[in-house]
Picture 1 (cartoon, rainbow, N blue to C red):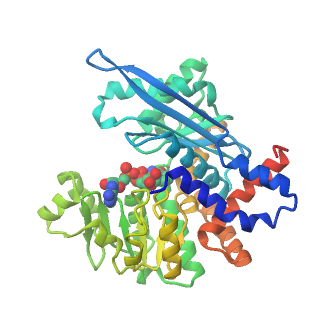
Picture 2: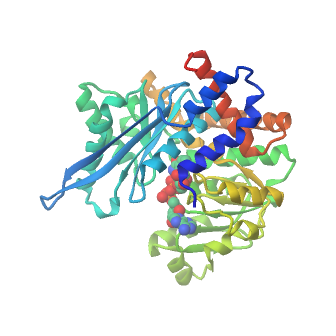
Picture 3: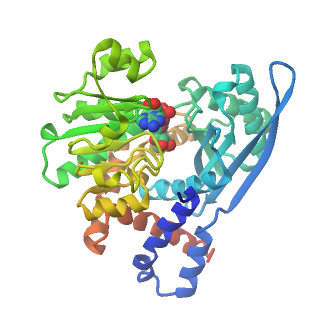
Length: 422
Ligand code: NAD
């Protein structure tokens, strides 16, 4: 399997032939491409913290700042045993494209620590979070780099990090982090924003193709923040959600799922496998879920969930990439040949960073928007980005993925050229 950064480079290389024609100055074009192939800065450090038993332990930590031509770097911090410099570099590049495709005035960044947070106590987690914030503090700030939560980090961790950062700075600076608790300047609507943004993309697609939501069935892999909210809001929008899974497997109901009942059972029994046994839900494997005969398949859990091995068995007509990189580039080629539409992650899951941007805007103004205002601004951003992507498809005869990349990379290119960085 290719490394995440190798995939990110391949995606960039794939659109070079389409972009080249728009830039007559070949020298500048080549310089810009080579500049975008690596992050502007990468910092790393072994963070040593005191454990509750008095011993010390070191954890490797990274922050990759890919490109800030369009605005301050922006991107989450993940705590996971599989974090690597390669992965953080790839994720930071994807953040640059994601922010550009939805027109946010940001560049891309990502941070991470190699740690299994489940093995730390709350106080150890607090010490690690604060150590991370102190490590990156000279390199961040509202107009430099604005971190946020990612896998295994949450609003409490952002609160600890903000506090440690502000202590170092000697003043309050709420716009330095997003994904904060409401009490510390977080935005209303942030929790459901990624799922909501994905549903807006789906609605734009359905409207463009003249389809009817009520007749369309949906299967979702993942029951975390993204999967749950996508499912709930898709149902509210009239789609029929027939299957959803967690890491233990999926629950299927041909007439549509009762999500509240499933969420309650998951809370009570821990996993869908157990919940299905106790509550007599119809249980299917994750592989079965991916190959269900549904209209829309939503991978909302893992990177690389749809690969060359299972792509052939997919029967859905549309895939909404809600996780980061859930369809490998090879699998996408197989799917496109079969006529399956793949709506790209850099657009579909950009709702989270869009509302992070609204949080930053609110903090800079010292003002709080209503949830209604947040959702309506999100809808405007997502719908406009979809429309712009569609125009590129019509003009250049490319796939959805290529169109989103073309749109994003072109925006970053233009900023680089105006800044005379190439
Ligand atoms: P989460 O940790 O809340 O949930 C992940 C879900 O995936 C859990 O239900 C887990 O059981 C399930 N899962 C894990 N392994 C699985 C497997 N093998 N098969 C099926 N399900 C499995 O994470 P999240 O915040 O919902 O993020 C999901 C994805 O979306 C990640 O790729 C993340 O990077 C991406 N993403 C999240 C956000 C956000 O705002 N949370 C924004 C952009 C992208």
